Length: 365
Image 1 (tube, rainbow, N blue to C red):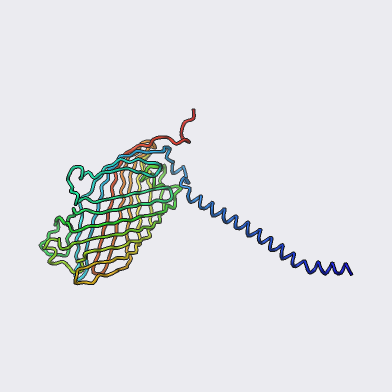
Image 2 (cartoon, rainbow, N blue to C red):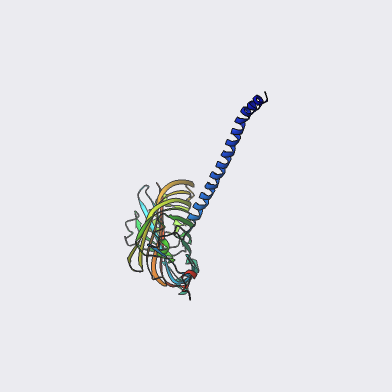
């Protein structure tokens, strides 16, 4: 009788013990899985943040801690205002190029320094006509960022006048102080083939490209544009045949874009590098346009194609470097009765040297 009771008790407890064992095994399995996932996620983050992960067959690292560089900048820009209704018309405005010279101190891939407008030093430009430009570019092996701010002066000239009076000649040029522009923005981008291709080798001299290589590039850009246009200051020969669609007093728009392109570094001889990259961008624009008193102000939203261009040529023997680079951006804004195109670029010519060897490259006594 006692044996039978014990046997029945064992049968009753077996499913409970089995379920308890299954729960314990499940907890252990989930804990191990969660631990592996956390370790995998942490490993992926560390790998992503490892900016020294490159193939030394293609890229050699910078052996020095610091750099000093003398620099000359020339800034270019243009603005075109136009319409297709009732007939195509366009006005193009360009200021004289702005020239700056400066000295910069670098640590790894960050350069900080000071520059001065050469025209202002020579007394060729009044305070009223001076603009303000700020450009900061940071390049690492995987990620890069361009930050810019630009406020123009009043030293524009009218060029390329089309669709107006026949009295206006094709080489027409006239001073115009009725245009003021303020823009600011940021470009972010990611280098896919970062183990073989180096943006810093072409644009910040913090690494050396030893073999030619290219890479796909993806990026994100956001900018704001604020333009005041006093068309009443235009010459009478232009105003008298000017379409109502071009009589815009104030335009403010935000530009958000995703871009995808390709870059290539060509090592054409020892220590010499030429670089070219082009990123077309699909841009979403939302804008507020203030027209003349007779017309209603409007909000617009639309998509356009913009472009980001980078070109560079550099000599770098690890100790000394010299070269030139150009960074250009274009922004296009179209409506059926109004269009605005603007672009600006910076040409940089520089020379410098690296100094203070890193500890791992110093000769041991």
